[in-house]
Image (cartoon, rainbow, N blue to C red; front, side, top):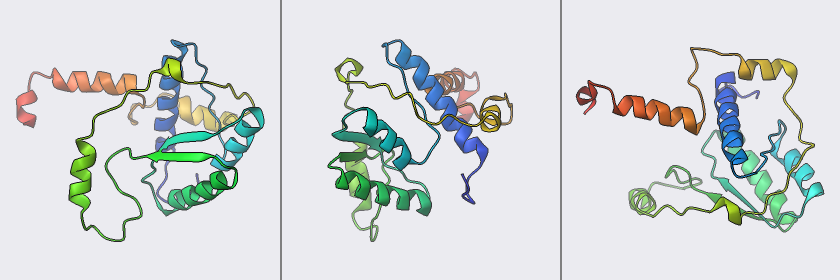
Length: 173
């Protein structure tokens, strides 16, 4: 949280998105655990409660700090025999030495079909001892603000629908 290119709005958007996912997962009887700590600390806590063979995540395309954290986490997972699958999330390719072939790889990725993973096939383990945000931070994450875009799929779909149904949509084309 001490990065120069970071603002509370970033964390708030993620917090609201996680709360939205938490709400949606309840429909499947799944409790989402959210922790406020470094990734390694979170996985240390998780792995004391359950056996972890594989971790799926979206590939981070952030700043140098997050890239260095991911390199440390890759090493940490390897040391513990955990298979870490980082899936591309937006077509950006990390760690490229140059842009040769970038456009072909991007087109290929964008044309792959979307695979849905049925939630009922996942084994879910609840982890209760992840650190919660401090009261001060929780206030900053939850106090309403008209100046910040609200996070979460539910709100995003509402905004998209409002945009697509706007009477003057033609001016955007």
